[in-house]
Amino acid sequence: MAEELPIEFRHLPYHLYFVNLFTRIHLLRHLNETNYKVTRTVRKNRVPKDCPITRPDIIKRKARWYEEQVIWDDGISIVRWMDNTVVTIASSVHGVESISSVKRSFAQKERIKVSRPNAVTRYNFFMGGTGQMDENVMASRIAISGKKWC
Image 1: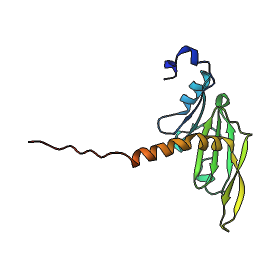
Image 2: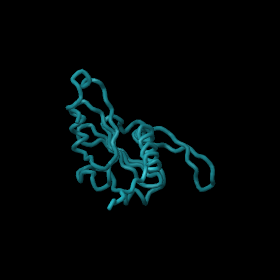
Image 3: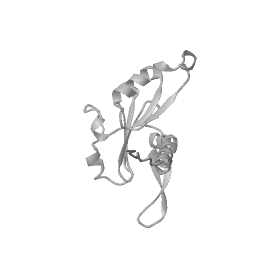
Image 4: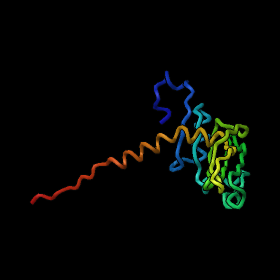
């Protein structure tokens, strides 16, 4: 699909955001080699075996808002962050040093600031509209049932 862009647009600095459905780390590496920056979620069974990041079942036993970030092959950073569940994000743009903060409500019902990897922040910012669009499409879908005419 990237090769179908007109030649005059290929040099522009595109940054693509993907969901985890049909993408693998190999696609992220390929797009990074062709100068397209990519951030995407990763399913836990699609993280390569040789990546030195902690498994999600071990992270679940740790404290809430635990984060782990590693730079893996070819400058691709893989981030795991424990919020309500373990989220895994791979990015060729957002490194391991960038941290932002977010307010969360804790058991005492007070708002506290917790650190969140910037890859998670940026992914949520750019993919939030996509989730809202999908929800609106499903809510306004017209059900047309076929009628048989004799």
